[in-house]
Image 1 (cartoon, rainbow, N blue to C red):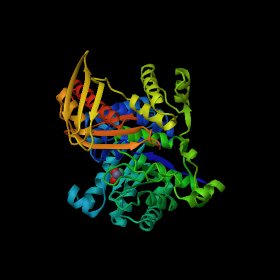
Image 2 (image 1 turned 60 degrees about the vertical axis):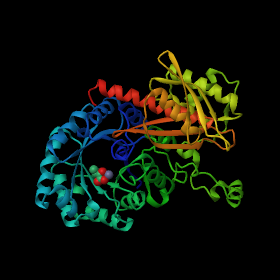
Image 3 (image 1 turned 30 degrees about the vertical axis):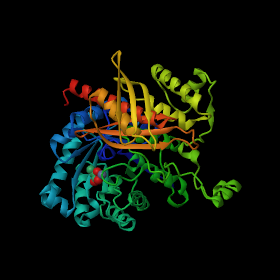
Image 4 (image 1 turned 90 degrees about the vertical axis):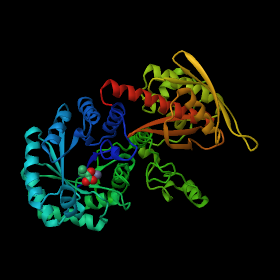
Length: 513
Ligand code: KIV
Ligand code: ZN
């Protein structure tokens, strides 16, 4: 009989631990809403004790997102477990996820605990969590490098203390699929409490050797029925198992795994774009399932085969992940209603204000670009959603550059009802524009990333620029799209500066700074 595999998404917890991926509470809420639409079984919304900001956003998600289980991570410590409960208790389906390391190196060097202490703490802390919340998951951190016999004892103890999900992580991405599958098989065979208590066996694999998704699949084959994963595979170091890879493998190779999930795969592409936009972590073009080239066929032989029968080179359809062809959808004569209807059809629900701004951007684009496709519209929307107040607004950008002159720029920005003009020279036109902007804003943010990519093919394609600015530990992302790449660069930079000003003011008001 086909087995149902539960999908536990940890984009907002392990994914957010990825360097530079920090999200603000509104962004986390938007992602959680989209994850619910995607159909995940559980959302790990954060690590409540980690910071007041994390606590608040878990609480908001627990209060507002209906459907999936809402979970917070907690170390095996009373204060962590209490804080996790306080944040998730508003959910209809709360879960506390308690973790404690079981490998010799983690116990000795990190925890400075003996195996006997780890066993006792597991019992005590799982029982404490159970006294607060009915749904408890326990993770034996670094299980992939633990002594099997000790791991079985800890797993049995956690179940007897009340855990209904046992998670077996390959924390450092060290295992091979053969070893990891065997480990899961052995845990199930050696801990009778798993069967008698109908416990869910979960896996959580990291990608240090590029095997996170395949290790998760080997574990499923061996009997695991929950997979912990993240959108686009983001996460600590090389990341976690990517949700889209695990889910699409189960769907495409149903003949081999005989397993299904509750994921609405048509939401995968949109979720991937959203996570990439909000974190500023771009998806590599050759990334399986959601990369720009995942469904592109370049070689003549492949194209000829595809024309005869798509199945010659395509094992799944782009439509299955919600990727519709970037065909001409609207033109320069399309009106506001047609524009709004098209966005609705694509699944976007913009406020009146944002719709108006998006429509203005669309009209400007349609004047410059012959064909406006869905990818263009998605780029416009990603500029308009989650927009923060425009403290600085671009009024004019002019650049001079070329082989015979030092690049220079003139920039006019609006700030509170007045405008300021500045000029600057730079190493290139973008550098000159950014220097002129810095003169006006009197800020000198640390630019850690500048990424430009074409949204569609053709020389009239829009360029989409993503920049990431860093101040302290906080990263601020900005996007800009235009057929003029210098303007797109300026828009992205100013958007990130506006976001930085807005979020810093918000944090100050909340006393979080
Ligand atoms: O990688 C890991 O072991 C974890 C645990 C906290 C589940 O993220
Ligand atoms: Zn992890």
